[in-house]
Amino acid sequence: MAKKLMTQLNNQTLASLNGKLPIPAYRLGEQKPQIGIVHLGPGAFFRGHQAWYTEQALQFGGDWAISAVSMRSPDVSQALMPQDGLYTLAVLDAVQSYQVIGAVQEVLIASEQYPQVLSRLTAASTKYVTMTITEKGYCLNGSGKLDLSHSQIQQDLTGNSQPTTAIGLLFTALAARYQANIAPFCVISCDNLTDNGHKLRKALIAFAEQKDPVIANWLRQQLISPCTMVDSITPATDDAIKAQVADVLGVTDNWPIKREAFVQWVIEDVLPADRPAWQQAGVIYAQDVTAFEKAKLRLLNAPHSTLAYVGCLLGYETVFDAMQDKPLTEFIQQMLKNEIMPSFNAPAELDVKQYSEDILARFRNPAIRHLLAQIAWDGSQKLPMRILPAISDNLAAGKPIDKLAFAIAAWCRFIVKRFNDSEKLVDPLAEPLLAVAAQCSGKADTDVALFLAVDAVFPAELSLNKTFFSAVHAAYQQLVSEPSTALASFAGVA
Ligand code: CS2
Image 1 (cartoon, rainbow, N blue to C red):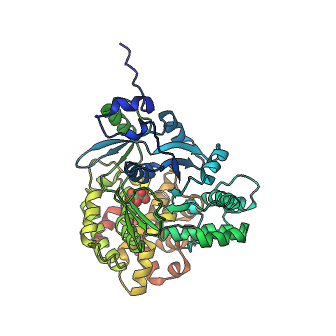
Image 2: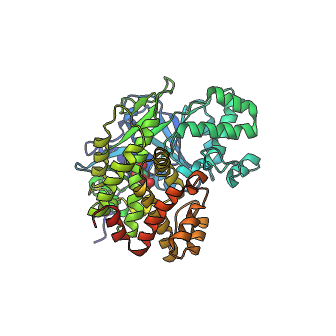
Image 3: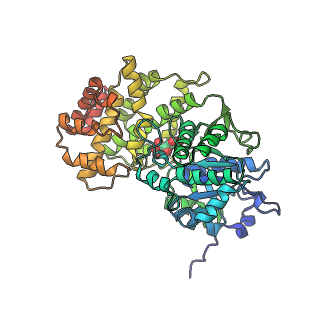
């Protein structure tokens, strides 16, 4: 007998889910919230984090629906537009729960729907532009400034064609608002970048300086760009969660999202009063976000990247699998206690030891299948945010760096393995990194020198630092022979 086709999640089927799980009731009423937020980069993290916070905030009213914009990829738009932007958030943790999110009203593709995107960004009703465009999306150089030699920035500066970078797109919209005498929207970076809001602001002003100093001045006076710290482990969606959600809802969802229960958003307290009720949704406003950012990048993202490279070398697939490896978790705990925690001053209100233990417990969440290979993406962008600053601070203070250097050596060996196995390296610098790997012989002297010469990743003060070189060299040498014994000896559990 033919299998009965399941209906799909959309505005028509939404009412039928009432009572089964939380749904956006405001979608059923006459008065639907208008769009007040544009989000660049509609990836899983955004849909599990900012969109969830805005969903909670919409319960308190206001025109804060979201127009999500993908710079190039049509995937999310093709999946969600037939569902009127609706999707399911599955929270997988000790307790599992499901919720239909309605905050995303549309998903546009900038490369194909540029006029619609620009009209959203230039509408006076659009007050906020949030973004998750990954570290590389900001086109910054090694010192965190806008890279004016970046090929796409160069192209966007010519203005002959529609902008292909987020910076170029935002400038074009802001310039149009200036011409129309409309105040700039607030821009909110939600990426794992140190000093993210300040870097974004400076990048936009630097771009404007090249295009029109009058607008650069206007932005200097009026552009609000808070720093933020964002946190929630949100792996990529897989077929298993699609099937699980269809089971629970009884309708299909093209692209549900899964994440852990833990979710945190700290925003620098500089937003205008006219804002979504994010505070009621649990957002923390802080005078200074830097310490929160540092704590999260060093206590969560640094061990995450270390687990990714060492775990992949040891043949593990997920974070949960890697966290079952005793020498590896022992190594991570020692790296945290002896090198990372002493490398920075945490926010006074943060119990660092407890926060770190909670993070390792989150890594042990059996319900979250988080691929190490996904975390391993974009190492050239992530390590300068997560691990190299701790190394620089410890070197300056004469504190140990051996385990942090081991993580760097593991990243180098991970690239060599990708090259040897002819496997794809997902990284904006994949080409130069694989070219280095092609020259590697397994001899630490030459291999480490080749990797540290990649100045887009390793600034001179590090690559020329003897202590750093010999620490990476020692770890690399051991990893070449046998990763598991190398780890055991570095974790002192030989
Ligand atoms: C992860 C982050 O993929 C990665 O690089 O380390 O996405 C991490 O899961 C989030 O920052 C957690 O908030």
